[in-house]
Image (cartoon, rainbow, N blue to C red; front, side, top):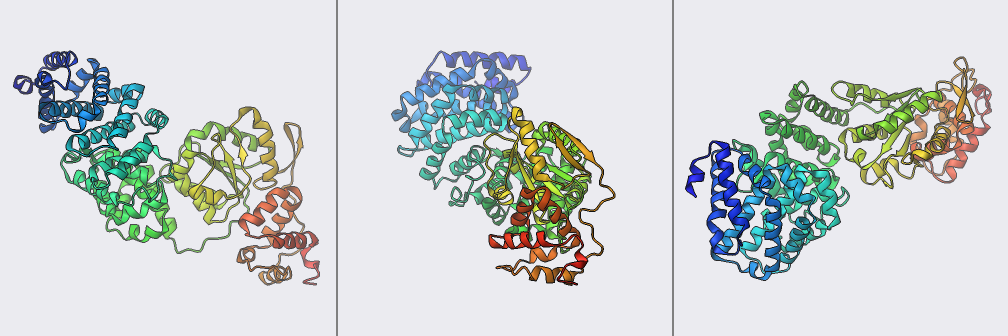
Length: 591
């Protein structure tokens, strides 16, 4: 046993000896004492490598090659078969179980290949879920707690290494429900709570990641694990078996939901995040940290704490010039969000400038490029980032929103989860821009912050390619003249363009003054005061008159969503606007 631990090279010799020990284990029963030495041999070799700060990949690769997946499945079947005995397991058999499961746990931590095998194995997922469900309803013991930590730890590693596949397979077995039962049963065991919460952060939808899950204040414990890992030399909290990157990803997942952001900040995460940025130990750590800060900056309740945190802004500023493009982009995005939210400058009312802006998440680019070309063919000026916004081009994005007549939002789950997309959408909303939502993911229904922005607006479903032409026709009708370079007349699939560069939407002899406009608005006798109307000027009023006749849907959408008119006031404004003569100067109010 000690020979293997002492002779760690060459690798092929270690491989052969581990192979021999694995063969002995496969021919035995881990609940029988005779196999103890073989399991302990492998485990002590792994422990020695870890003490030497070496990754035990040689051993793990050997274990995978020797089909530890099947052996693990057999062991789990055996444990579930003797589950009553497992609760009271003691002596050498208990140590056999601990050591073997520890080997598998380390294997999933190091090997994406092993995780993929487990995720694709219905036997592994089913056995671990059944075993955890049983342990949730039995007597608590040291062995029970260890097995629960093992199951949650392996699930966590699978979710880290093969996220998409793991989420799909795990949801089929309703693991989230089982884990929530575990959290309720072991609410006094912080390590089980922390692991359970982090696993849930991958499995739950963002609207499910609410503060009810965190009533036990476990976020503070997770932040403390992050602190312990961040101050260690190798970025690992050995006591809890989690690295800085693992904990950051869990916090990142939780921070998607606004309800969790405040708890993360009040638990003392900001100073730790600042130190992680300063150290720049690993690219992944810095990226996750920047994304967390970017997400946190969306919540007004904690914004003052973010901008007042010592060195936080300076640390992000220093990353704007990092050699890694992803870090530069994330740093610039976080700074843009912080600075525009901290601006004391008054926000101008969004007037109708001549372009349509397309806001979308990168995975939807092919669909949105098709929409862009259709809009250009129909005579619209379109702004769309096709080079994946980074660096100073975020400034171009903000200018594009400020100068947009209308903003098309490509709705999807990934759009909602993207801080970059949220910055764009909320900035457009802040400027009171007209927003037209496009659904790009089948059956997707916006909620949370995106649901607030979209509201009850009519959306256009581009999820079915065969319906594209019909949906695009309706979208063109909704846009009307907003962002159009020239008027068009529909002619089947095509358009006939009519140059209007020397014509005005309304032939005005003279612009109205602010006082004249206010007098006219007062004469409408609205039932409720509405300051949004008084931000209008003659040009905007002219544009509204044009929309009233060319695109009624867009006209009434602006009255409801942007000018915040309701009920009878919509009819009063529409009627008064229709009665205006083309020449404002001769209107009876001012003659």
